[in-house]
Amino acid sequence: MSSSLTDRGTYSLANAAEQARQRFASLEACFDGVTIRHLEEMGVAPGWSCLEVGGGGGSIARWLAERVGPRGRVVVTDIDPQRLRVELPNSEVRRHDITRDPLERETFDLVHERLVLVHLPERDRALDRMITALKPGGWLLIEDFDITWMRLTPACEPADALLFRKVIGSFHEILTRAGVDPAYGRRFHTVLRERGLVDVHAEGHIEIAAGGSPAWRLHQANVEQLRDRLVGSGLLDDDEIERFQRLVGSPEFSSNYHPFVSARGRRPGRARRDRGSQDGLGSPNGTSRESFEEEAGGRSTDGRRNSGVAAHQARATNKSADARLFELIEGYKGSQVVAAVAELGVADVLAAGPTSTEEVARVCGADPDAMLRLLRCGATVGLVEEVTAEQFSLTEMGTYLRRGERSLRDAATGLTGPTHWQPWSRLADGVRTGQPTAAQTLGSDVMSYAAAHPEEGARV
Ligand SMILES: C[S@@+](CC[C@H](N)C(=O)[O-])C[C@H]1O[C@@H](n2cnc3c(N)ncnc32)[C@H](O)[C@@H]1O
Image (tube, rainbow, N blue to C red):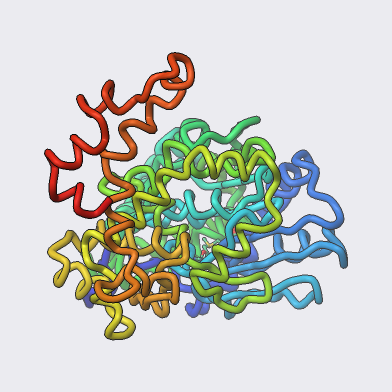
């Protein structure tokens, strides 16, 4: 078996396979009604801007495009869009990997995925990116199976039931090895609430499907598409697959199908809410890589790539008052990003031209993963821009952090250091008492403190 057949993270059911046509037809027949009911309940209306992730055959994107009309817009993505038939003038088809390709922020009234996240080992990251793409107040709808929730109980002869379970189990084994989370659907409620979504609602759909119905034709196509892997891995032989195909194709057969869970939630408020505890800006050494990375310059609505500065400027305008206030509240994070870029000497490394994150990390003596997150934060505040994946260059603003004449590097490190932020952190006390806060926080006045800490004092 070639390694690509077992690689974790490789999407197992590629759209190029001839069986994909049947699979998409079955998915549409089985689940479009469920999905559309949820979309209608969520109030999708003319003028909405929608993102359909991993659109497959495109039926839901087409429905959305009709629904939102000429004033609305639908972006439909897929890592392999060859089967997407979405040709309405208000829709855009994008070849796009939801786990890593640039994505607009705070742009869509609705983001939807069906049977995509369940396949992705990096599903948490993909989900965070989808949420970041929502406007405040926008709706997310995610839909996936939970194949562990209830046992499939086919109505057939015991020997056939055994074969049926063996084939279904083997199919799931192959998918699980590739990174599918078989119980993903059951966690949806928690997964959405943990991310701060509101009006969360999750429910399951279970069909008792007869042999030959779209649900079992879906499974016939699934098993056929993975036949080489199933046989090659020794889990099944061809004869067992043939018998399974006949069994689930027979009108006498019936069985319950896996619970299909739809969960929706709304991004709260009108203000940007992605900068709270989940925000990478708040945890450059922490685990929140996803939202950290979202800070990179994205694409403008016309699809062109924003530079870090342009993206920053775009965000600086058109903001509601509460969003601007929230930025002030979290302003210290931006200045600490500037300080870290300055202190680590990132600007000097990038002065040579576009440089890979690995190289910047190596020269600066930093952890490559944390450096990537820092650089992407640096892109949001306009210091650097990501020219190609994980390759950064310096912006005009960033050049002021280089060592040398007209450098603001010392200011960036000194004015963001404890000599300053400690007294400022007690500002309300100072106003209350009328007394300088330095003595309280530094143990002396600022000048004495600077003298006792020459490394810091020299820069302020
Ligand atoms: C099981 S199909 C579901 C298709 C469609 N959403 C539906 O329910 O009819 C999964 C789809 O996700 C796409 N896909 C897989 N990995 C992806 C990724 N990382 N980013 C975007 N799309 C992806 C596949 O190419 C495929 O079209």
